[in-house]
Image (cartoon, rainbow, N blue to C red; front, side, top):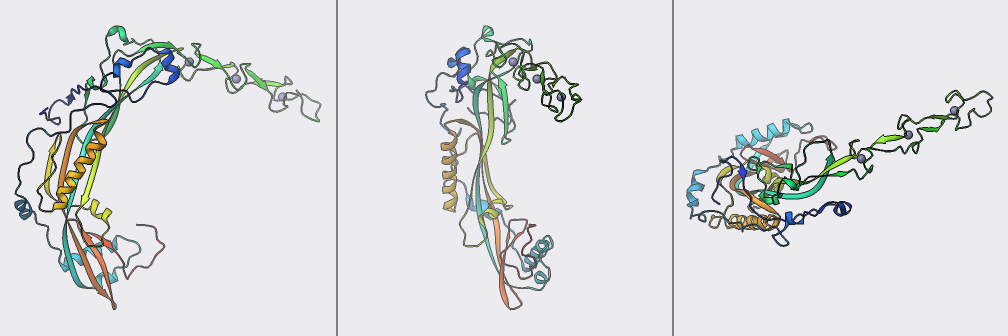
Length: 376
Ligand SMILES: [Zn+2]
Ligand SMILES: [Zn+2]
Ligand SMILES: [Zn+2]
């Protein structure tokens, strides 16, 4: 199991047994041979090996050296004012006078820790489908036994890149008469019930208009007109088989590659919204990527270790019954946040500077003049 999926030729052998979560529609089941054996094995759930990382658990890390070497630069009064000025100039309804004239009273700096776990997983389902049969060669059971769902080898997209792709299961094809048109390729037009002609819409079939003696010009006095739905043919090409009369039925394998994200920001007493901190640009402190990662246990901030344990358990519980984990990545980042208290025309106000790119969150701003403005 010790393989690096990002470096091999991306063809992965997933030798596991699966059941089909999607059965063919009832009316097809009656007429198609049973492929139950394709999905046999594995009991009620897809069975995967337990989510264990190869190799050893994380060795004891010297976190203090990590922390010492990552420094988040201090926000000075100068930087705080610049950040606010560039923020207000990007907003249509914030005046810059206050930002220029305010008196900064206090800067409360705090560095938060953000933990993220990304899990890249693959899930597979199968379903019966069909397409018009155009005399292409038929890869049916006579050519061999269909591989089981997780035995089918496919090209895996680059790690952490979501995708959904569909494949035809080998040797599962068979040709049947089209069930919609019963093999005729066409069916009766619903506009004229097959007659090709409809009652004249102008004279309603009376051959002449009301209170007029001359015959209807629209239908030349016949009372009937050619059906526009079928151009007078009385029938329409079958949309199901596109007029081919037969359908190629086959089992389609649908593979979904998905990323799951778990995110946690360490506790703080600042009034800066959590969703901003979740998106904030951070300083990378630690990165761990493998086919499966181990929970962090000894980080100096205990809540980060607990978040790592919780995130890994949550992803395992959510994914393991139905998907196979291909890669995991966990990171710890430092997010600087500064609470700025300032004085302007006799009142005190607060704003926040967050992230390494000094984004601004304004709680109340004295120089805001268009409250109904919806442009953000
Ligand atoms: Zn018609
Ligand atoms: Zn007419
Ligand atoms: Zn048809």
